[in-house]
Length: 358
Image (cartoon, rainbow, N blue to C red; front, side, top):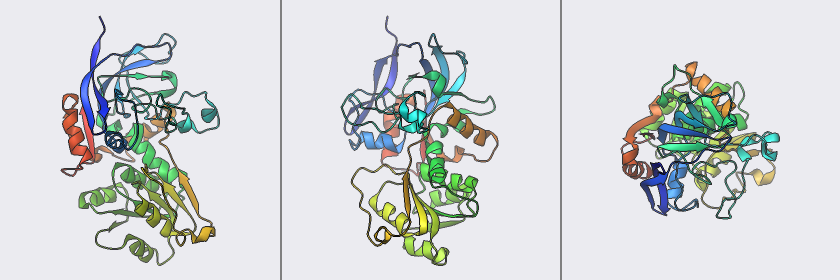
């Protein structure tokens, strides 16, 4: 008899529903994970709204925390019953992109025919983590054991939010003594703020409009907070930097306005590190770009994945350099995930991240 499981499935634009699906079969290099905790990402909301196309019937979600239920016949170095996470980006480890050092770009073409977003497979081109079970391909590349000292919610941000946020600072090459502006203090922006501090920035300016998020930004390392509903954020950042501008501006929202503002606050030779997922074309303002003569650098990042990345992020948590638990503001059972989507997609009740327990 086929074993069945509950899963959050993309039905059509505007509808993600909880339904039954078969528990996946395990191939030689795979691992089957029993999900204990997962969460909803802003990218999942883009899927829900039809702004990012995925196949109907796909299980959504890409932030798994769980326990190994079954291992493929060729998987070594792990054992059933072991607590693990896997990154949102699940590289094979042997593609051209991986061998060039860009594991997050180990992608291809989905069954719809559109170009997949780099190596993002869970909840994009293969079934994802908002379910009772998750099949992890290339398990020896992607599974990272969770230290016994860490709970599920402590590591819940590692698969995507923390890895993505940190990459904004890393790809921006933040240096000791830098001044950094982070536009938008959602979960990824908050982790970008924390990453800038860990990279050595000594003046971090966080931009948002929600008082609770600006308060958490200070906890995460922001030295200044700017409410863009009260002041012009570009003018305020230039005032805070005595007209110099910032060394690195991190855009963590994915909108034209914040992208342009991030470009406008750069010092000559500064770097705009873009983390946002954009759902439309971007334009580069001529003045902000200094007509192409400002020695500016614009870089983009996709969440780094793989077991080594996950292990490093958990080391940051275990060493108490950062506590991401304040980002979890709401908790739901998998049975109530449709209600969790309604809350998260409408940004009600001060929600940052929702912990979903199976």
